[in-house]
Image 1 (tube, rainbow, N blue to C red):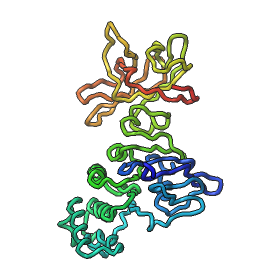
Image 2: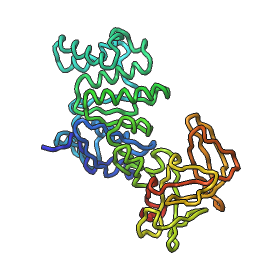
Image 3: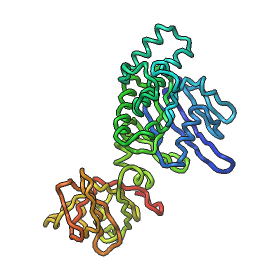
Length: 363
């Protein structure tokens, strides 16, 4: 027996000499919710289609409960995998009512009519659609159609649930509501889930772990908090949330950045000759002047070049004195500064993340 519900081992897919997915290895525990996150063309949807059985891998294998279901020589067809998949288009049948759509998969499994009715009613109660059981899809909103698709996928109690950017057709407010709904349903049913998205907010809200993909490969696998606070690559640091990437070089006992330098002992780089750091805009404090005792934090003089009011916060672009560097800083809405104003940025080295630099210098 294996402790992994779903396992990808060295999975790859190439089109001729062009790799779409390369050497992807990943294990999911039973009941785990994992998102594949990345930009268009990163390989996440190709990986999902191999999981679903729609594509044969050119290398590696996929296992469910320790049994190989995909390899370059053999692919178990989609209908025999014990999986459910939800597409961007929902793919619910327009000529069937809500209840008929949800019952369809159960009827294929030759379950008794009484059991079908009981299970359909139970899942419709869970997704809060029982009162719409006899309506047709054309009479539903986008969010309601999405709930029907979720109910139909979950009611058959699949081994694995696959979701391919299921919220991409919804407006922003409804997406926010539905991502919480998806997580709520997962907590209720504990189905092992793989969720593909390019939207980091969706991944952060729904996932136990996030797999960040880039150019067909995995960049980092981590829980949302660790991924945000401790990115392991430059790509992940720039892709997950807003950040400033500061590149520094050691000069004696100082680390020199464009426009300022700091004691080498205060920078978490060890003996490396240089390092890059991810510094989140909201972790930087703005001041009109530095205190007499600056303590262990970094104090950087600069000038405000741009500002934007975004309701929940101000975003400033600050140029450190004597440099072409631009640093983004977010402050509470009541902390206002003018363009061209001279300010001091306070950076806590305990809240920055060292990452590999552009030339591969280790952080």
